[in-house]
Structure formats: C-alpha cells, structure tokens
Image (cartoon, rainbow, N blue to C red; front, side):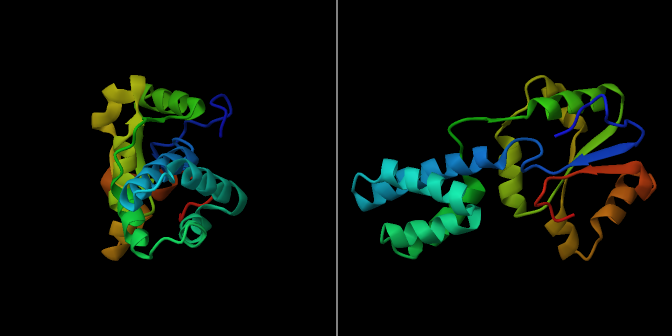
Length: 189
C-alpha cells in the first residue's frame, strides 16, 4: 500500500478504513463463505460445503463480491431464506481464523503510535459488521496501543446528519488539513 520512508508524518491525526487497508477484505469474505457453506450443508442435510465454497470463491474472483450470493442461490437451487442467513452471518460471524494486518500497515501504525500521533478507524459499511471485523484482527504488537485507537462509523455519523470530517475535527481538536485519511479503493470517503 505505502512505503513508510515515502510516507509523510506531518499530520496530527491518521484515520484508516478497515477493508483492503488494514487487511485484505478477501480474507474476511472467504471465511464467511466457508461458514456459510457449512451452514447450508448442515441445514440441507446434503454434502455440499466443499462444492459451495469452491463455487463462491470462484464467483468472487471472477465477478466480485456483489454476485456471489445470488449466483450461489441459483446454482445450488437454494431458497431465498438463505439471503437473510448470509447477511446475518456476514455481520456477526465468529471467524475460525484471525484477520492478519498487512505488514506495511502494521509497520505504519507502529510508527504513528510511537511518534505520538492520533490514530483512528473511520469506516464505512454496516457498523455491526465493521466492529466484528475489528474484533477478529490479530493486532499482535499493536495490542498495547488499542486503548488509544478510536473508531468512527461513517453511516452512524451520516444518520445523525454529521459530516464525518467535521466530526473528526471536533473530536481531535484539529483543523481538517491536519487529518490524513488512509482509505481503500472502494471507500466511501
């Protein structure tokens, strides 16, 4: 994502998106697909998990996340009731494996904390799902800094008609130009 040597540490506040910034979003989705495929196998009473997981992974890689569940439901002739189960699982999944921070992000976060910078998470998407992802990250040596990490949810702020950047300005008591946002390609900010 970024080279720390080329990264400017001249801002007061650094806020990060979660997906495809802290860790590859694919890592989360593949685990959700694994859990979902096993749920379907158990519910249907048929040996389907391996085939469903393979299909979901191939569909994700070929077409993208948005098409995975609809295509899976059609391909395996599942009922529409699985839509709700999948969305609930996607938001509340207890992942079998920890999400691993990208090495460059881990190094960057350590540098920011060690330099005394304010670090936060500003994330878009379902707040329950995004918080669940944060709970499953293996923070490793960053664990000691977690009490300093503030989390902000764009959807909650917008629901309250609050501009996320304006909120950060007030929260950290800095001008907007002192805030650096590190976001992924699909980020909403």
